Image (cartoon, rainbow, N blue to C red; front, side, top):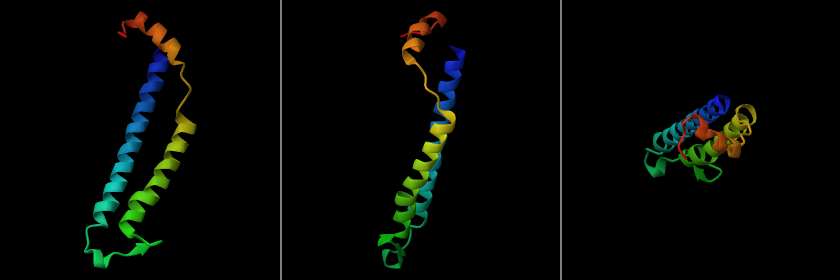
Length: 93
């Protein structure tokens, strides 16, 4: 049971860290590069540079990071067994 709790906690921490990385990436590029006069925008593939880096490239980077972290750190957990045994350790359903 403690092993399952440890795994679930680890997965929650990894997910939170990845979300924060994505948010900082998105915010930095969207508001960092996008904080100029629209006539001064630079374009990549017909999209404003800030949009390309924050939304297109950011999506690809976070998707890759998520895939790697799921393959390396996430494990299959049988939640039915977890719920059934949870009451034995003082858990409330």
